Length: 251
Image (cartoon, rainbow, N blue to C red; front, side, top):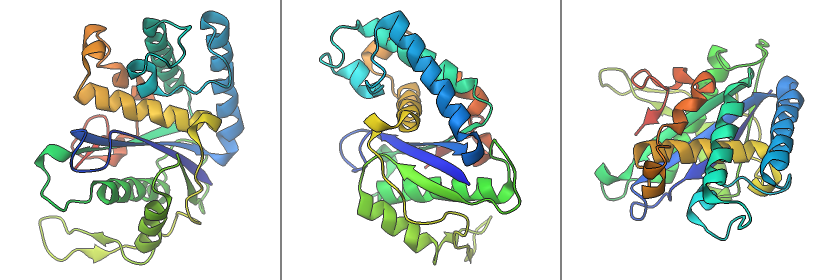
């Protein structure tokens, strides 16, 4: 069984932020504990080096944009913790990171950013299980389950349920396409609070770093941190996209 933890960066309305990013961090159940233990060891080092409490959430956006987040730790140290977290994730041999990026600036009125992003993410997770190219054990009868951060729970559940019955795949070069219902993702999504899940915090980091790579804020530019997303290179699921060298699905 593959577990995909999901978080986002930016908002899903056509107004607001110019981009919307989804990040799925995938780990196999048979490698879950050793992967968790590696993150726990990383958090212990961050506590020893920088005083970051073990229970404190690494919330990338809040770390950078909210001065009241961890007031006892300087901003450049918090940025360094994020960089170190990305480097740690990149060393994890059984992790796959799937990313979806929607540029809302060129979308027509009525375009459903949230639905399109989630449909793309679920499809790539399904494809990874079917094609057996996600990291970790490769059993012949693998399945997957979704564990997102608390978000629009009803809408995510509705999207997944619908895709199990109707999932139109466009034909290459045009045409009617075909219906390919999802078969590998079991149950409804099981939602988590990010403060209680190191894996969802990892997904939050991936989403934030991709957003900042595309549209860095002034602080990220000033600190030359816009390419921190590249540090995740070894765990990026490049098979998700034929056109992006880092596997980012761009919509």
